[in-house]
Amino acid sequence: MNQKLINILAIAYSLFMLILAIIFYKSNESFKFLISLSGVFCGVIPLILAFILKFKSNIQLVFFYIVFLFCSQYLGSIRGWYGLGWWDIFLHFISGILIAYLGVAIYERLILRTAGKMISKWFVFLFIFAFSVFGGVLWEFYEFSMDQIFEMTLQGGGNKDTMIDLIADTTGGLVIALWSVLKLKLKYKNEDKYLHS
Image (cartoon, rainbow, N blue to C red; front, top):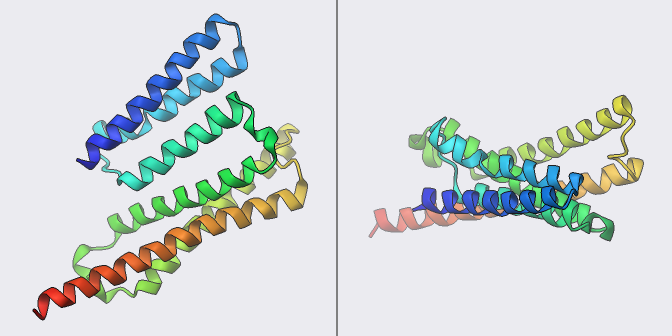
């Protein structure tokens, strides 16, 4: 069921961006056309991972991936919402959530299911939280490098912009790390009830 939902989300977003790409191509809006075209390719990534690489994604990860794409590519770049000022901060919060769910997916694939309760809930928290923060730091490295090498203006507000972005990334990651610990706590509690009933 989860894989069907993932497929529907990915196909729907890719088709939406393909329709926009055709519209913008016909109206000679080259910037919006390129953004839409990149949206088509970004949208099919979950399908490529599932059908070609046989990588099973969890629904939360793909959902926030599609939300992030929609908010950054369509609302941010095509509709011009980056001009709102707070939009970039909101996107960094969403990306913190997205990277945290990527951390959850990696954790679930690296840790043996038989390990179960032997792994501390707080280790899970630390792994997910640290993974999310690390992802945010890597993105700021990328922005700084592009600005220095190609004289771009990704870090428009300098140090203040970087720190606000990192705080937003960290907050998003913290939310999911705490949520993951709460889910584990409830899961173990229910398992204990079942075993002792």
